[in-house]
Length: 73
Image (tube, rainbow, N blue to C red):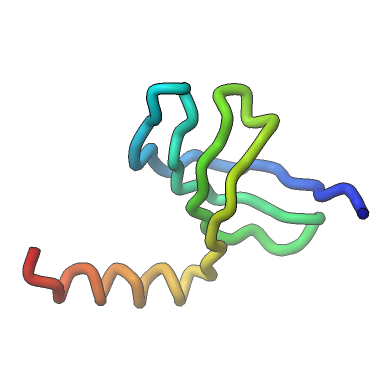
């Protein structure tokens, strides 16, 4: 299996933190030297391990914001 290359360009925010120190973060990052996108996933404290997540383009993130803003929470 090929190695996955990633670079976190900016940590936008931390959504939560587990008792083991893993943080669910919204980051602006690149995967395998491609265009940077927004990414939500859990990260180990040293960012050496990651959980499953979702990657969004700017347009998708804007649409998600619209959906969240329209929800009656």
